[in-house]
Length: 314
Ligand code: SF4
Image 1: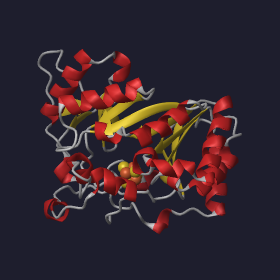
Image 2: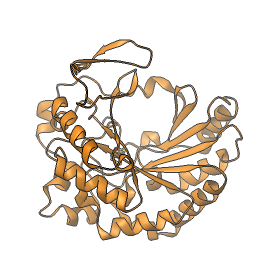
Image 3: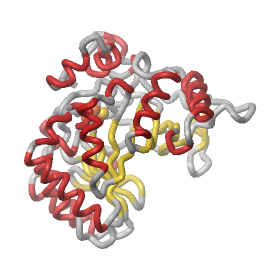
Image 4: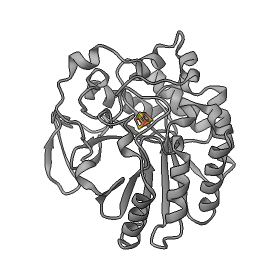
C-alpha cells in the first residue's frame, strides 16, 4: 500500500504524532512483516460476484471500490487499497443487484471498500439499483472521509450522494459508520460535517481500532469516545487490530487493551462505550470480556458456535 495523504491531513499531522503514525509509511512496515495473513476477514473467498462479499447468511458487504482519500497504514485491506482492480463496471453492479434480489435472506447491506464516499458515482449507481429490493431492510455505509477530507463534503457530487442516502434513510434505517482513531481527529472541520450529517435521516456510529502509539491510553480513548458522544456519534466498536501482514507495529498487548476498556466502561456512559471485539479469522467478531470477572484466560476464546480458538493465530 503506497503512502497517500490529503493536504488537510498533511496540515493536521504537523506536530501531531497520532496522525503522522496513522498515515506516514514507516520502514518498520517492511522489516516487521511477521504475520502471514493478508485477508484475515476471508473476503476474497466469500466474494460471490465481483465486489459483493457474502459471508454471513443475512448480511452482505459491497466493496464499492478499493480507493480511499488517504491510506491508513493499519488497514485490514492493506493488501489491496489503492488498486484499480476493485473498480466496478455497470455489469458488476447489475450482477450484485441480481444476487441480492435472488437471496432474500440478506436483509442488511454494508457499503464498504475502500471508502464508498470517495467513489460517490459508483455509490450512487449501486444505491439506485438496490434501494428498492424489498428484502433489504437496513443499509450501512463505512467511511473515513469526514476525517480524511472534510471539505470534500462541499462538492456537488458528494452532496448528491448524501441526499440520496438521506432519501433512502427516510424509508429504511441507514447507518453511517465513521472510522475515528484519535481525539485530534475531532477538528472543527470534521465536526461540521458530522453536524450536517446529523440533520439527515442517517444514524451515525463510529468504529475504532486499538493502535499502539496512536490511541492505546485511557485518556486518549476517553476523550475520543466522549467527544463523539457529545457530538451525536455513538461509539459502536473498538477492534483489536487485525493480524495483517504489514500492520504489525500497531498491534497492542491484549491485556493492556482489556485494562483500558475495563476502566473506560467504569467511566463512560454505556452509550459512549463501544463494544471491544476481536475479529477472529473465519469466526467473526468475538467480544473480549472485561476484567470484572475472575479467571478469564485471554489466550483463547470460543466463537459463536462454541468452537475453541487460540488467539495467537499469526
Ligand atoms: S479509509 Fe478504511 S479502507 Fe481506506 S485505508 Fe483507511 S481503514 Fe482502509
